[in-house]
Length: 274
Image 1 (cartoon, helix red, strand yellow):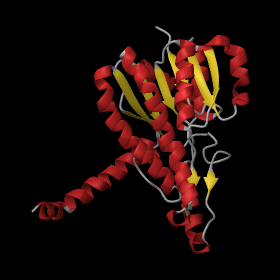
Image 2 (tube, helix red, strand yellow):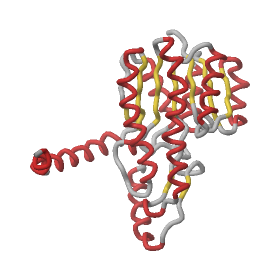
Image 3 (cartoon, helix red, strand yellow):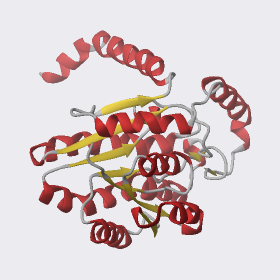
C-alpha cells in the first residue's frame, strides 16, 4: 500500500493524537497541529522527518493557510486532511453569552472551513485526497446543555455534504465522522461552561443524569484509530460514518420520529404549497 501524508488538527490528545500515532506506526507521514507543540515532542523524537509538528490556533484563518502550505512544502503532497480540532461548550441556550457562542463556532465550524479551503487547491491539483471532518452524533441529533455545540456540528454537516458534491469530480473524497461518547477530555479539561441560571437548577441535574446514562460505556480512542484507517484506505469511503456502538440507535429513534411528524403534518405542507 502506498504511504499517505496526513494533516491533522487538534493532535495534542484524544482522537487527533491516536490517529497521528496510528498513521505514523504504519509508515505514513503526518503534519500535526496543536496550540502547544510541546505536547507533540515525543512523537517528533520517535518519528523524525515523517512527523511535522505545527503550532496552530485554527480560528486564525491566515495561520491555517500558512500551516497547510508549510505541510505541503515539507512533504510534497497531502492525502488526508483531518479537521479534528474542537471542543464542547456546556450551557443552556438562554445561558450562552455572545462571546461563548461565537467562540464555539469559530473553532468547531470556521476552523474546519479555513483548513479545508487551505487544503483544497493542493488536492485539486493532484486530483486526489480525502477530507475527514470530525463531527458527532450531535451533528445529526440534539440534546439539552450543548445547543451551541450542536449548532457548530450541524453546520459542519451541511457544509461538508455540499462540499462532497462540489469536489467529487476532482477525485476528492469527504467523510463526516460522527462519534458517540468516547473517553477523551471533550467534557473535561477541553470543555467550557456557561454560568448557570438558578431557575434551571433542576433541569441541569436532570440533563446531566440523562447524559451520564447515554455515555455509560464510552468508546476507546485508541480503538478508533483502526476504524479511521479503514475509512481512509477504502476505495469508496462513506460520506458519513458513526464511531461507537450507541449513535446508530440514537439516529434511528430520532429519524423515525422526524419522519412520523413530517408525514402527520403533510397536509399542512400541501396547504402551504398552494
